[in-house]
Length: 346
Image (tube, rainbow, N blue to C red):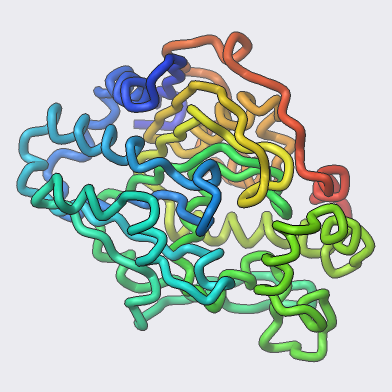
C-alpha cells in the first residue's frame, strides 16, 4: 500500500471514547496489517506529572484497545504493552510508574488480561541514533526493548511545543529515549563538547522545569535571548527525523478532544476541540493535527523533512469524516513561536 492510498480520518463529537472508535472504524481496511501481530506497543504521551491536559487521557487508550479487540478477535491472544518514559518525571526526580498510577493507567491492567505497563527507566539495554547538537554531532539512546514489538501505536495529544513548534504522533515516540538522553533531542546537552555553553550550563533542567510553572514569561524571555536556544530550534527537527526513521509508528491516533496551546507541551492551556484523528500513515495523521491547530504541516520542520524524504504524505488526500476547515481552531502558539519558525534558516 503506497502512501497515496492510505486513509486518514477526522471525527468531531461530544465524547472522546466514541470519537476515537469512529476514527478507527473509518480506516478499518487499513488496519488489517495488525492481523497476526503478537506484541503490540501502545505509546501514550505522559510527559507531565501534574497537568492532565498535557497527557494522553486513559480513555483514549481504552478506546483503541476496545476497538481492536472488538474488530480483530485474534488480538485477544496478543500482548498489549503500554510503554512510556515521562520526561517531566525524570526532571522532577520522580518516576514514570508514579505517573501511570496518578493518571489511571493501572486500571487498564486490571480491566484487560493481556495489557501491561512498562517504564523506560526499567530497561538498560539501548541502541543509538545520530543526532545534532548546538556544538556538533552526538548519539542518542533509545531502549532496545522497542525492537520486540511487531506493531506500534502512538496515541498523542496535539500540542504546541517550546522547540519544535508542535508535537503530534511522530514526535510522541521520543518517550522511548532513555531518560537521561531526552534533552539531547533538543541539541542542548553536549557530552562530546562539555564546554559548550547553554542555559543548562548555569541552571539545571529540573530548575527550569520548576520555573516554567511559576514564571513562564521570565523563562521565555531568557530563552529568546539565548543563541543556544536559537540553534536548538533548528537541530531538533533533524533529530526528530532521525528518531522517526527508527521508531516509525504503524498507527497514529490523535486525541484532540482537548488539545494544548500557549506554553506547550506541558504548561500550556487546554483547547476543547472535541476531535480525533487516525491513520496508518503517521505523516497524514500529524498533517491533519497541524491543520486543526491552524498550521500548515510544511511549516513544521520535521514534518516537512519527512515529507521531502517520502516517508509519508501529509496532504489531505484520502481524508474521511469531517472537513478540517469545519473543525480547526486558530491556536495561540508558544511565546517563542516566531523564533522557532526560523528552523529552515542557516
